[in-house]
Structure formats: structure tokens, C-alpha cells
Length: 247
Image 1 (cartoon, one colour):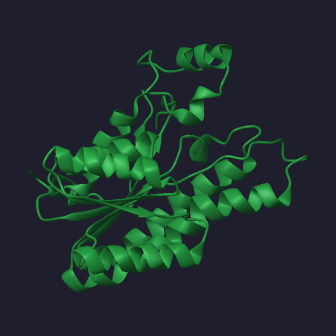
Image 2: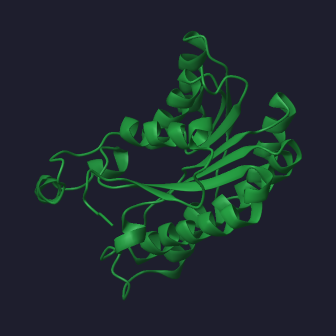
């Protein structure tokens, strides 16, 4: 149990990558606070973790709302006394060509995907500095590295997360706090279910490993970065993309 005694908070934990991260961190021994908008799914996840002998708490959270962020983290800190590991995973898409993209869709994606990460980091940084240990892990995307037509808002938000990761890593590294990012490629999640079969087939052709990734592939990388084994890694973007992007 390499994460025994640690407390983790995962945003966007009700499904997909966030859910897989919560399960993996719990399996490694961490107490896990699962946060997302869907209370029913959160309760099911928390029950699954506790039924397996773990420790979990479900807190409803819309990361697009600053007051909800502050309230959720206040509740989590009151319950567990600290947050050692923060996984900023919550994210949305509002795809459209830039010439037709509405300002509201730009703002919603930047606010949910990028601004929320900054706000969540602010909520945990005090306790991490005090105990001189912390792990901050931001879930970005391959499209934050390559760009993607029709996703100017999403790509910008995910590229911003990479810059945020490096800035925070420099700010808090002297206090034994690491900040890293995981950049998934084409992962089988609810977000990709809506894509056409033709698009998926073409995407797989661009992946050297010849398959779509799983949420568990990403969760394993997050768990590694959260562990003491990754103690000398900070400001890094770990690509989990099957070789779709190299270098």
C-alpha cells in the first residue's frame, strides 16, 4: 500500500478517467475524496471503494463554480484534516470551428478545464506547504500539445494546464511538492463514445501500439506520479498516448 496514510481528491471522478484514478489511488491505500456533479454516481463509486476495504467520501462539486470549489475543499479538509494528492481531472468540450464558436462556449471550457485547476490548487497548497509534501497532477490532453481543428477552446485550456503545471512546479518544488501533468491520447471514455466509427478507425491507424487507450492506462500513470517513486519528477508532462505523439 504505497499510498497508505495519504488523502487524495479527484475532480470529475464520477466516470471515465477520474473514476479510474479514484479506484486506483484507493487500491494503493489512499483515502479518496471523489468530487463531481453527479451525486448518484459518486455515491456508487464511494460505496465500491469502501466495500473493497478502502476509505472514500463523495462530495458534489461543479468545478465551474468557484464557491462550490471552496466549499467542497473546506468539507474535505474538515473530514480528513489534509489533502496530500490533488488530481485535477474535470473537463468538458464544446466543439465548434473558431469562426462559429460562441463566446459562452469558449468561456465555459476555459473556466471548467483550466481556471478550476488553478482554484483547486489554491485550496490545497496551504496544507501541502505546511506538511512539506504534496502531489498535484493535472490531466491535460494530447490536443493541448498538437492542437485540434474544431477544438480551439479545448486545446487552449489543455495547453494552459501544461503551462500551469510547470509554473506551480517551480513555485513549490523547494517544499517537496511536485506538480506534473498526464496527457492522454485517444482514450475509450464517454467523451469519445460520440465519435463516429470512421473517426475511431482512422485514429487507431495513427497509434503505434495499435489500440485505443483505457481509463486504467491513465490512472496507472497518475498513481505513479502520486507515489514516492516519482519523488524526483516535477514539471513533467507524461504522455499516455500509445505513441501517437512522440518527442
